[in-house]
Length: 211
Image (cartoon, rainbow, N blue to C red):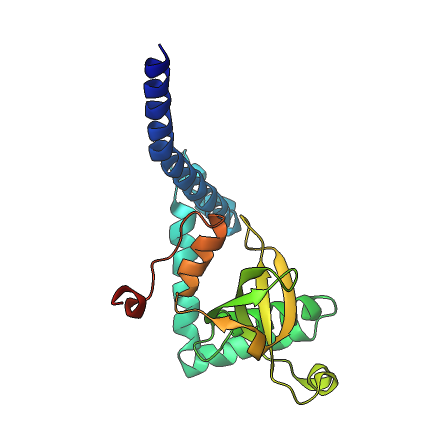
């Protein structure tokens, strides 16, 4: 009887390991598609699928969002479109309240998405939350301005320490560069390591494998 219970338990765990990632993936995709489908609401009532065809078209919002992003990128690539975008940005940056939010979001997005930016380009090991513990962190830049003046001549870097299993929350800390260890793993691999709470360990570097 005990053997049967252990066998059934093994089958149950095996089935869970197969279906759990699939279920979570489908749930996330459904959440993303459902959110993007809300972009259809920007269309006039007469242009919406329920008015034209009498029913909703799942995924149409994804296509619409993709088309808007593609069209905006195309506009930004030519002179006339760039002038229109500059004019629109001028309006946003001169509107009270809106300008504060817009400037903050734009600065962060430019830093994260720019090819020349250094934010989240390196995975590091840092001592956190105390000197006897190490954790995964991501380099986001280097101190500047008054912060750099207060820190003195030492070489410091700014890092983001994500929490697990939700890496969108975390801690911003400034640490001496000499107290960090740069990792060979990619940022994607480091994120998987954090999200999985250390279960999905990245493979060793090629140099380590050859030893």
